[in-house]
Length: 338
Image 1 (cartoon, rainbow, N blue to C red):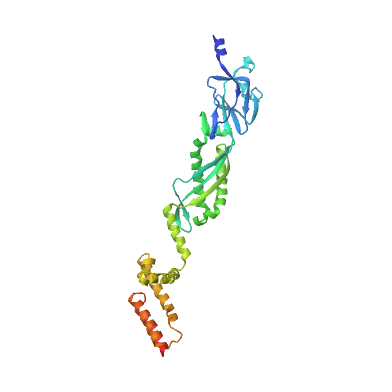
Image 2 (cartoon, rainbow, N blue to C red):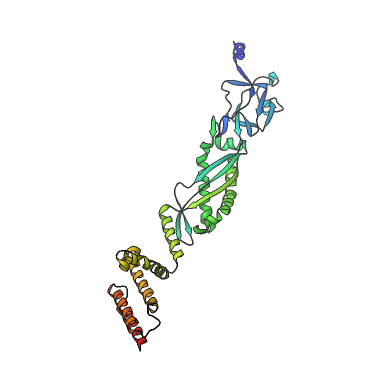
């Protein structure tokens, strides 16, 4: 009966793994109730590693190549309880294959804005995202620290853990760098290099080798970006008074062609009471400054001076010129008549 049971056993004499699809980092060779034949062939392809587990412990690790499983290639066989068979009977062992291919285009990003100190804005909440690539470098360590006895372990299973490690390191680095947010875009390559250097040790702990790390974008949440855009716009304008005078000066000819004439300028350009007041003052300054040009070279012509005064008086009536400004210009023009 025992002999018949032995004959009915299934023996494995060829052990190999062909990857189907992407994303598998570790897989257990299917051998439930199977035994490995002494002298069996083990094939480990390029971009693979194989690990033998005996009684819960890693017995040996194989890189790419073709192996005949004997006591020479697998020393653990000498410790199996087959002394009476001269180590030539079938044996039980778990075999795991690992993919050492480069895992590309792994994405990372901040699910929520992170808060850091900024020397320009005080405190800012910012987002960042990018990509990285890695490969499995130490199958023994990866098995012990990560995959364990699972039938299969994939890139997707590891993705969340690695992303959290990246974000944690990124938050610390961005906070310590002292680079103002406004300059981060110009320093993305340097930040990428520093982050890669910090993360290499973390990846190594899990048996992984970080191949590349890229910070693709650093940005503010939408509401903060609008505030920054407004500030940038104000800096580009510079002197608000000069800008308003320029706007008024370029708008007067257009306003004169439209219904309502100059009186409609305030409604067309104003964006609130404060800006409207600034525009009115600027218009007055522009008009007063331009008044001498309206006076002909023959300053002794009383009719032309009177005509100019009537125009200026009309601007006072519309609130564009103040009475004091009108009186000053009036005195100046009348003085020229003498």
